Structure formats: C-alpha cells, structure tokens
Length: 592
Ligand code: C2E
Ligand code: MG
Ligand code: MG
Image 1 (cartoon, rainbow, N blue to C red):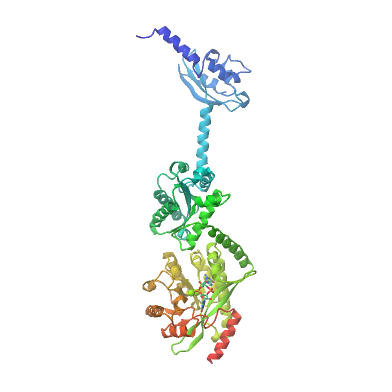
Image 2: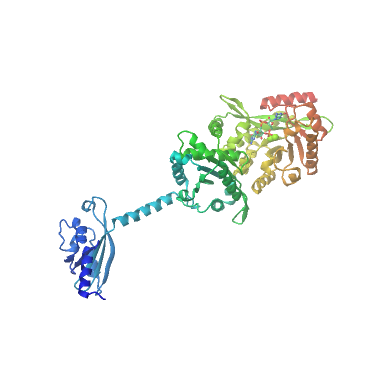
C-alpha cells in the first residue's frame, strides 16, 4: 500500500528539519526563508554581528564570493557551487579549535535557492594527516631506489630497541645487516655516474627479491618483520625482526649476498660486484647498556668494514673487539693526517742485488723503496700498521705520491753523486687504491717530469691479488707500461693468480714471496715451487727476484735455481739514503 502523499511530504520535511546537515532556503537576494536547527547552530558563531536574516551577509566573512556566484548563475535551476571549503576565523569557532564548513548552493527556481552547510573539520583534518604522512614518507624515502632512507631505519630501529623487555626476551629477536658494495667507486669512476645509479637500483631490487615480500614500505617492519633501506651512497641496511636465532639471520645475510654476487648488466656492460656485510645481533645489543639506533647502525657498519678488510664478498657478525679496532684505526687516521702535514713520513731503501751466473753479486742492481713513519710517541711505525688505514680513509694517494716523488728525487741524487756505481733501478710499491684513483697516471707522469727520473729505471710493484682484479686495473697497468715504466708482481705465491695465469699480466718481473724463500733450503716442496716459478717466468721473458733471503744457504738455493735477483736481511736491511750510500761504497770496495 502506498503512503498518503501528504503524510510522506510531511515526513520528509520533518527529516530535513532534524537532519545532521545544515539546510537553508533563501531568496535570490539571500534573505533566509527557512533554516533548520543544524544550519542555525553552524552559522550562529559567525552571525553574532549580522543575525541570521540574510545568508550572504552571514557568510560574507568566510565565503564572500557566494553572492556573486549566485547572481552570475544564468540557468533556471542547478548547482551554483558545491562543497565550497570555508575555514572559520579562529575567534568565531565553536570550540576555539580550527573549524571548516563546506557550503553548497543550489538554485531550485527563479524564486528559491537552497544552501547546504556541513561541518567538515574532521574530514579536512584527516586529509591533512594523510598529506603530512605522505610528505614524511617522502622525506624518509630514497629517491633513486624508492627504498626507505637512513632516517626511516633509525626510527624503526629505535622502536625495536625501546620495545618492552618482555618482547625482547621472547623467542624473537632482531638483526641489523649493513651492506656496502666492494667496488662501487671504481665502477662509478670507470662507467660513469648514470651507470652507478643504475647499478644501485638493481642492487636494491635484488635485496628486495631476497627478502620476503613486501619490504619496500616504511610500515612493513610491523607487518612482515623486515625493512630494507638505502642509507648512503652504496650502503644498504636490512633490519630483520622476529628472528629465532642468530644463525637464521646469518642465513638471510648469506642469501642476500648470493643474490648480489651474480653479475649485473649495466648499460651494456657486465659488472661483477661483491658485497661486504656486517651483522649486529639484537640480543647482543640488549646486553650492552644504553644502546640506541645510531650505535647499532655504527656497530653493523664496523663489522661491514671488517668484512671488507678480510677480502670482501662476505659477512661478519659484530663483536665488541671490532669496535676497539675501529677506534684504533680512527686514531691512526687522525695521526696519519698530521704525519703527512708535519712530514713524519720518510722512505728507506733495501738493496736488491743481482745474482750473477758466475757466482758474483751485483750490489748496485737496484733498491726497493719502503715507507716508514716516525711517530712522535710510538717511534718508527712499519707500513703494515698504516697502509691499509691510509687506503680505507683515502690518504693513500697522498702517501703514495710522497713515496714516489721522494724515491725518484733520491734516486736522481745517487746518480749525481755515484754515477756508474749508483743503483740502476728503484722499485716503489703501489696500492690498489692508488691505481683506482682517476688522474693518478697523470701524477706519475708529472713526478717523472719534475724529478727527471728515467721511466725505464722505475719499477712499480703490485700484488698478485691486485693485478688479477679486473679490466680497469689491467688498463691502468698497460698505461704505466706505455710510459716505459717497469712492473713487478709482488709477493708471488700468496695471492690468487697461479703460474698458469702469469702470462695474462703485463709484468716484467716476478717477486717470489718470502714465505717460499724462507723454506727454500729446508723444504723440498718450496724449493720445487721456486724452481717452477723461475722456469715459467723465464719462458715468458720475465725476471725473478727472491724476497726475504735471510741466510747464506737460502741465497745459495735461489742462486742455484737461477733466480736473477735477491733481496733480504742477508744482504741488507732497508736503509736510510745516507746509510745506503755507505753500504754501496763498502760493497763496491769489497767487489774491487
Ligand atoms: P713488500 O713490498 O713485499 O716489501 C718487502 C717487505 O719485506 C719489507 O717490509 C721488508 O722490510 C721486508 N723484508 C725484506 N727482507 C726481509 C727479510 O730478509 N726478512 C724479513 N722478515 N723481512 C724482510 P716492510 O718495509 O715492513 O713493508 C711491508 C709491506 O708494506 C711491503 O711488502 C709493501 O707491500 C708495503 N709497503 C711498504 N712501503 C710501501 C709504500 O710506500 N706504499 C705501499 N703501497 N705499500 C708499501
Ligand atoms: Mg714490494
Ligand atoms: Mg713482497
């Protein structure tokens, strides 16, 4: 049965009258004909001065355009404006807190208009919150990889640290994985920054892929217990929560490293780049007092540096002893900067003698330059204690340049003083970081030029592991050869390359490591290795030097194996320039 139309109309009017939205029927000039209670309650605070007689007058302070909009509306009926946002001046709001009204205006016919007024304060608030959250996320997102950034990691990590003890003590724990690409700088330098960026994006994708999805949103740590972030140039961090054991976390670390070790395809080049990873375990963290997110990130970073020092492409778990070592390295770094500024570094020279086939010894065959540090407190510091630190902190360029220039100057000085009797070759050690530096070849050229050093009397020594590295390094070595400089492979036998790959390296001389020479006279095995090395080197037209000869019988063995040159305490320890001249003079006299 249909309701009686008059009753239905009555019901509708009743409903509109009580509706929780403000309704006002007005005349074209704004005169209010009808107003429901909600409309008057919403409008009252702004109508204090005007009264509620004319809607346009009431709304003028917050929506002054309304009257004009209505007068310009030419249609017989329709929507004049919809949801016009009108914030109330603070002193006019109901509760003294920001309030926003939304106003819609409809033309019913030529005589009547209907206004709808709504309080949209909460809605506006929600919109603003969303906007703020978006902006905050943008500030916490790395633009290149779309991963969360360091700020985001710190925040999440702090939540984990601050978590009530009960939760921390339960079966689940968290781990922080700090990763750094082993050769990123080199790749960036050789292939360019765009390629570097592309590689970083691929690395980020592989890290995500190696984790359970999804791991790219800041909120995810609560949902899936993991967070992957980029925290610096080529530094990435993964936070794993809900781990039952450290071994589980190490397994995830291994999985990520495997994924990152596969070759990359970057701008048409195949790139291989190992990653070093440091792991800080939450339970270990909980035992130390007063820990915070920054400290945990720092610890994981320290373990990463140790992984890199151990050869890279591996993971290491943080231990407190690592922190002490890192602090010591930082001390050395600061002191080394001072040492360079105050010229505490100097060079000593160890004679390299020729082992002549007739049994004689050529004392002026050459010398090897070895750097030393005269430390104001610790006395003379050997290179193993500061060369790696210099490499890590970028000081190796300055150290290397100093050694090269000093050596060349001293060499030229000997030529001037001794003429024929001066050493004929000077060997200078190179570190990997030097070869990687852009523009370094130019600085070698400059040193040759300013010192007058003949290139063919300079020998640069690289270690096996370095020479075997990659295309970029091989390229640099060829550039050095093109300058006429000789190259030697240092510490042969301790590194990666084997006799079978010797022919791939652009070197003139192979230096057989002390560890073989020191057992030459006692171990048949080592003697055979020396013999084989000399034979292969000879067949490739390379010379051999036996390093670390300490006894007469070791000297006899390497001579019997036709090693061309020898070096070691048996002949002389490394000497300062003036002592070297005296040493040469005394042996010259001896030979004569
Ligand atoms: P290396 O190039 O293999 O130098 C030979 C090292 O063996 C020197 O140690 C030398 O003093 C030592 N040695 C020589 N004969 C004997 C011996 O008969 N017995 C023993 N036990 N040792 C002997 P040093 O001067 O401590 O240098 C160690 C390493 O540090 C060098 O090994 C080289 O790799 C590096 N190094 C030294 N100077 C420089 C430098 O100016 N730049 C770079 N990048 N590395 C350097
Ligand atoms: Mg050397
Ligand atoms: Mg050596």
